[in-house]
Length: 221
Ligand SMILES: Nc1nc2c(ncn2[C@@H]2O[C@H](COP(=O)(O)OP(=O)(O)OP(=O)(O)O)[C@@H](O)[C@H]2O)c(=O)[nH]1
Ligand SMILES: [Mg+2]
Image (tube, rainbow, N blue to C red; front, top):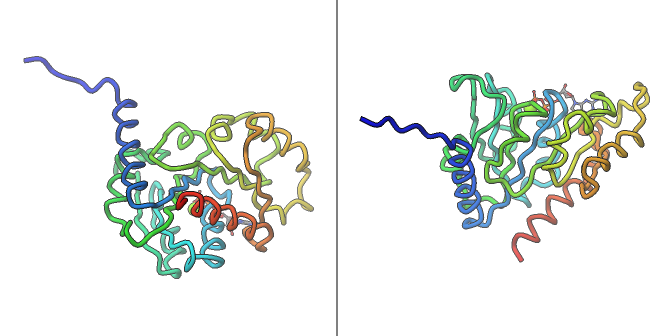
């Protein structure tokens, strides 16, 4: 008997991701895929975003993590629908794959939502390689990571529509040159919208929230 092997896993993933996008579009839901190194501030940015606008933007969250539900627990106080994906039981993948996103979308009340934030597994490399059906990727990069990261890990910046340069409150304590960092971001992708943010102090959060609202409004037109 012939043994069939799915050789084109990536093609299968792409098909699933396209179906995820169709599912979201059919419900009028916009999806952001947040990617960034462990600790860059993805969850704190979501907390600040929801403090500012949860009632207005009607978000749902897909939380990607290897091992814990810690981030989902941090977001619970907002009462927004959250689905946790732990990749540990599936080999500890360092990214979320479209099949897992499909399962999570089926568990979200999409009819009640305007936007889904996917917090990808903390990693600046793997999540950049996978389209999961999102409308756009957003990179969250903290200033503590260094000016060279856009050049060393360009795919994430190439794939994204926006970058949050987070933890700007730390700049006085660092040798980092913000202009050099921004130049490196632009060298990889000059079309990126760039937000200078401190999710800790709230600096720059309003501009990011306006951007989110703008995306949702454009999606409704
Ligand atoms: N000083 C400062 N600390 C921040 C800022 N944003 C996040 N942090 C801190 O950085 C640490 C990591 O923040 P998280 O929001 O958990 O980062 P994350 O990207 O969600 O991390 P993973 O989910 O593990 O990938 C926490 O101690 C935050 O309080 C910021 O703008 N300034
Ligand atoms: Mg997190």
